[in-house]
Length: 493
Image (cartoon, rainbow, N blue to C red):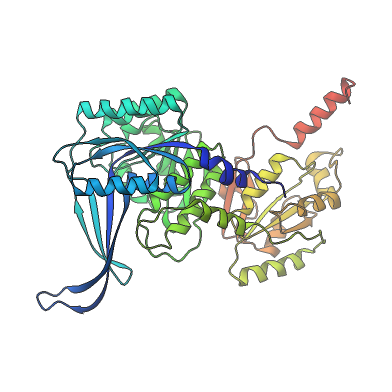
């Protein structure tokens, strides 16, 4: 079977990417034990320690995620000359992360977080740290290192800010300007209420609390509220995109041009969200650096986050886990097209929904199937477990497109669509819109392509959620027809 673009990215592109991570580096230490009694000395639980582990944290956890995706990773930041710094160096060596960007400050505490767990639940966290900004000479040392990395070839940069002093206003701006000059995408995990120092970044990725802190008021975790908040921040700052992580509601990206991409969270049993934001940053930026679309990059980031939240503690995503998950998304087998009435299709949808599967629906004419159609349908299919396509009948297409259309009759268009691996069922409808069809089918998600707003989409009252997917630029049936007509006119066809 021909390798598709996501398989190609996971198998061949990821291992070749070179990404720099700059920010507040930490060591995360975990004490695992069992709680069986209350202390006689004070009303606190006694944790009988079983074992301890240490992993990379903060910006180093972002680097760890990238390294476990098999990227080539270069880490820059500030550490001390203490025992935890020695532990950090060993962890970096074990993870095959290039730590040549580490600035060592004498008599400085390497930021370390110790979490005490009993029965897989956090009981308390102990922080060891000194928050002081970088000196000018330390900033110059980091920038010299970055210039060398850029000269050797970089595909992306992540700024991981925990407000521990590394990403000063001047350093953050120097990094972003150098990245812009070199054409390297920059993603920022922000902190604080003033994001001026991130101006010029390609992606700024706050969670809901960080979004609210920056705006100066609480923001409801609802689609319209998130978009409205992002639009205000776009007026105040100069970012290309705001990417808001919304916990169980997934991720929303809002561009300066007003485009919005939504991606629901992968349904998983959540044990621990520690480091999940770092995983999203690493997976998303690596996909962008690998020249995947924002929509597909979101799918990969959400899938990665869905894996790590099922683990206890700070856990980096591994490339083989993403490969396995992607393979599980592929259909088990191909089946020939069988025409279904809307009632028969509705019964199939009910069976899928009873099993807990999410059913996605989209519709269109799909006259002369082309690359833009296929990419759109693949992205729609990733929103759930099953994709049903409503196909305009020949009569419906003539009313919408004119008497010369469709060029391909409905039965042939249905066969072509059903042959796509991402499509589960095709239902032909006679009306001009799918409103009546949706009233019968009642899928979970309705997908529409283009620049629509969710509250304007016909049939939205018959589904739980509407998702808007941008069409692939440069591909359209009308354009293909015009190209053919021009060639005929010139006698070249």
